[in-house]
Length: 380
Ligand SMILES: [Zn+2]
Image (cartoon, rainbow, N blue to C red; front, side, top):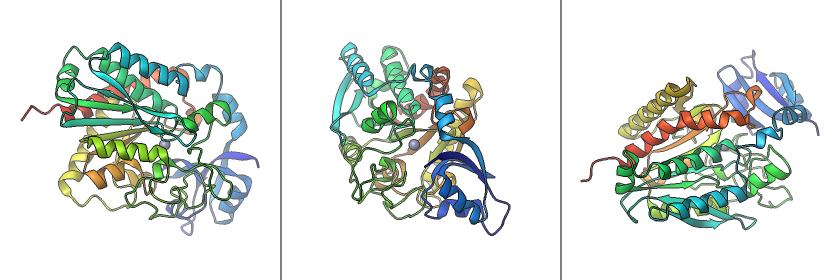
């Protein structure tokens, strides 16, 4: 069925935009702004939205969107599963005194899930983690944490990086969902989930809805119990091997902070995602909010790009995401950064290749500030 990118607005109090997000409509929501929502829908879904009182403007059909943005040139500068593994191995070999490549698990299709440990002392008490590519189509979310690892290793003999790496460890896992990533490269550029074969014949669980804190407590378009939906939460918490690999790594390393990269929309999100209530603990809440706002300033200071700091559920409700779990279960300050671009018509999930470098450059000081906040405290 023909699929389109639609901009949905509402002038009717009978059908507010918030209801669009809190109903189980099976929509693939791309972008949420105060006065409109951008989503991918087929013609039947679009018709249903109009019948509910929404105004549905077609921005573009999916096919011309993909052929406009997913050009051969747009592949340049992005890792594949294979080149990422090569580059992570090379980094670990070139810096074997402070870096170690770990296989933390295997994907549904048996691909190794890789995490690079960076730090001078093994088993130090202070550790921070960066994850990328829970969602297959979000290619830039591989490149930012990969380049962070490269940067830390390239600058490991000068301060402040040297000092941090003497006191603690940075773990970087740039591609949590390699099966999905491979599928976006070979078959469907807009694939989101992993490659689990679901009961009933559909494929894929959303790895960023499969974590075990408040798992499955919502049933909405952006956190769905329908296996064929883009945000399918899975049959139970931690049903997916990719998510269990992250769970077990976090349980072993007890990170003092976790940052997970996604795209797109240019946002800095902090818990909760599962509820619009703020975190109970006022100190935690104000610290995370202040840290998110600081990252917003740091990012903007590089190339002027605006990333908005906000509570995760303010984007849309999600239960079972990474940050809710690492904060809810471990009290670790936890963030999700939605990278470039800001809108679908600037490429959406298919970021033009010439923006990879500036996107990394603007995220570097925010990532370093996060590392400093976790590892950089003076030794006690
Ligand atoms: Zn994502």
